[in-house]
Image 1 (cartoon, helix red, strand yellow):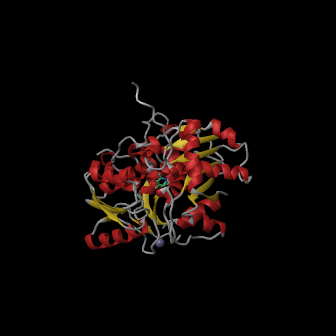
Image 2: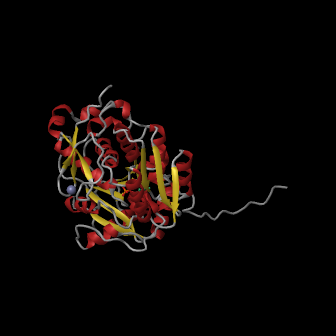
Image 3: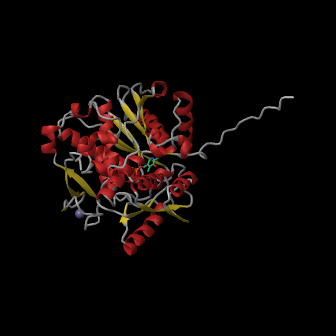
Length: 401
Ligand SMILES: *Cc1c(COP(=O)(O)O)cnc(C)c1O
Ligand SMILES: [Zn+2]
């Protein structure tokens, strides 16, 4: 069995610090907070440098020393990662941010960055001998975990709100997942999953209830650093639901810094939410350490319709410690941004990704961002996964006679 060379050594609690063994199944800490993976960065430092990664295959497993999978044969991959960083020169100049970029996760397997978390999460589940997992989802995560579970030979039980996009429903079903719909929100689905997990001894793959999805999402941060030649941008925008992506990016950058691969100030991390579901923004504005449940949440950007995130306190910490901020935008602004990005830059992005652009425009106007700032927006998914977001008015031509 060939080893990946992973420097992962243990799990630790993001709140109380209690540690857990890596070779056993663990979900949340006893105290109820998410567990994170700790790496032996001291030893890694002696072996790893920026050059280590240079000539490796263009997928996220190029960083396998900084990922939690121990054996190569447990890696479940569809070629995810190393997505392009596209300059948004035209729109950047238009809004007063000439050094504006978009990292495009729309071109990844399953069409959203959820593939990253699923690839690493399912690989670890396989390594730990999991036979069946369960998770609540707004659609994209369920689709990605169903697809990767199918590849790994793991059974997946997926529970989603009936409003979640039909396309993700079809993906789960096609991949052979056991799929159920709920008349309610993702938080309602989560309660049912928790019950099934308890009653049937399933592996709980809910956001942050297993420690490995975040390691997959961490690779977005590793890639941004590498793609900018290990010189970090000034700000990174992230459409925030459960917050796994932003926590992952923050973790990645701190690990790279500890390894001495990057230096200087970390980029300002910026959480973007929809006005109809903005618990992190509300908490940030009051400088709170955690968020409150956002009642009656609603937005077309369903990937970020998460009224209360388990890891909210880690997201907020990442914002405070990097000098970042949290911004909300309306669904109308999101739709406008989808059209503007497609028409000016040729990028047809998901509503969550478009929200970033609308937010960047606001932060230039408010003076939070300067014209000289290098700014990266994460487009978390493909616009074509959201066939109903836009309604185009198209004229018919007369029949030729
Ligand atoms: C899940 C999702 C998000 C939010 O991701 P978190 O890491 O949970 O905050 C953003 N955009 C899309 C397209 C998603 O599917
Ligand atoms: Zn704890």
